[in-house]
Length: 192
Image (cartoon, rainbow, N blue to C red; front, side, top):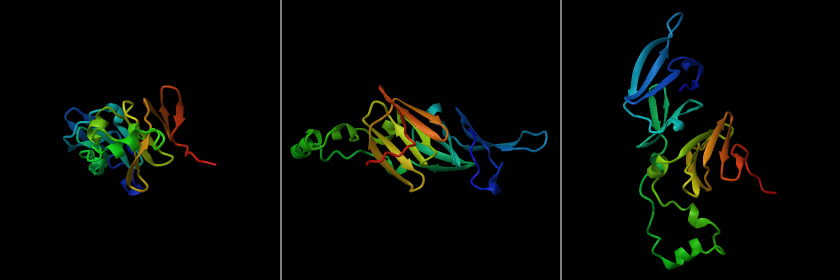
């Protein structure tokens, strides 16, 4: 997968990332008749889902059993570390909280949007898409009633209700498919 350089000074430095069953490698562009001058190991990580290898502005996103990562050249940054870990279950025993969560007159659909598995388990059966327009990464699992979104501009994760059976990257836009509709996820919804 190729990535765009972060600056003109980095142009051509590591334009090609190669994902193999033995790890990730960076290939440097050569000049003249030489296509590549060096093949350098980046790390021993193995991407666990080829559909989740996505070129981004300034890197290539990939997923492993350890989380979501962005690689640029030979530098790797983990994006998902902040949202990994056990889910909060201390409220599940309270009758009042359960009534509030499940009773539709209080919170319609809230119970299907609450996390019932940790992020790494969620990620294992997910699809990832990149919305270039809004600079957002969307992680969705069709078996769940919620999706995770990472904003590259604000550097924060948030969660939304709803999920998609398929994400279609059509640069610069991203589309989400459900059983009944196709949504342009790059258009911001406004209320009037």
